[in-house]
Image (cartoon, rainbow, N blue to C red; front, side):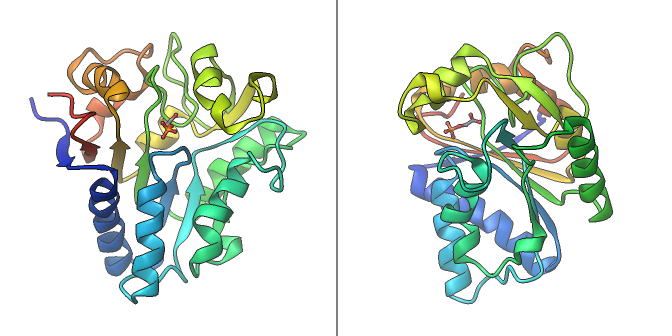
Length: 243
Ligand code: PGA
């Protein structure tokens, strides 16, 4: 059964270009589309390519809306490790997207339930996500949906696993500075996207990638739910290529 389109890139730069092609096609054909965005190291070549393509006049972000997957609990927009800051520095500050058209869960929300419900509602008001970008964690997380006994539906608070805290400590002064909790779109939010593009690089992701698309669908491997999605493109470099 073929349930995912796989595109192999020679290296992360080529992966960025292949992923940028998907975003370019979406934005050209639907200028006010809604894109779902991700943080982490893997999307960086894609973001550099998108900035370049707008400068070259190939893409126009001025009507695009964007919703990010997740944010650390307790980090405000100006915190250097917040995902809002990451998005500003690596993409939004360099393209014509309007600030009011970019949403990231509010890491400082006091009423968590209200913030999560409002996040879902905003995406719905926009007409849903047209193209969702995903990375994958070594434990199979997408967004910050960690291995669980069930697939969580909507945007919610999560406790991060030790594996994720360990993987993300490279961005912080010490492991103790890594937040223990986060807010993330749910698996249901992600699955509602019309199209999904997953980007993966590096030999350390090969095994989890194989489990995700060629193993059983299991909430202990959250990304494995993507086998149920009708339109997933996996773009990976040769090192991560799972076959
Ligand atoms: P990475 O993060 O791109 O920095 O490896 C991916 C993820 O944790 O989802």
